[in-house]
Image (cartoon, rainbow, N blue to C red; front, side, top):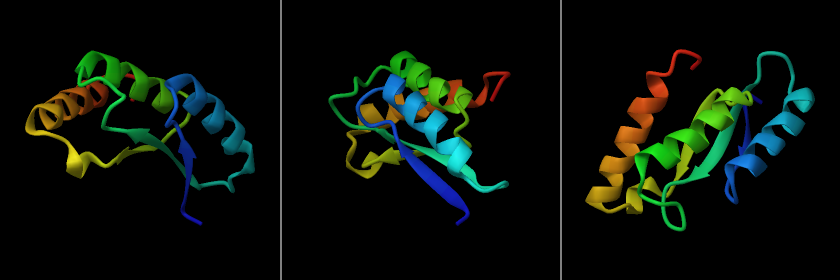
Length: 93
C-alpha cells in the first residue's frame, strides 16, 4: 500500500484521532491521507475549512481527499480554493 486514508468526516478532532491511531499501523514510507468533506454540513467558510485541514495535516496527513468537491457550487469551490491556498502557505505544511 502506498497510502492509507483516515476519515475526518465527522470533525477535525475525530480526523486527528483517526490519523494518530493509523500512523503506527502504517509501514515506513506509507503516506497518510485525511478524507475530509467539502460539502455541507461543513460551512463554505475558508477559515473554518483551513483550520480543520491544518489540524489533520499537523496530525500527520500527507494529503487531503476532498469528498465530493465536484458537486460543490461555484461559491463553495471558491471557498475550497481559498482554504487550500491558506493551508499551502502555512509554514509548518
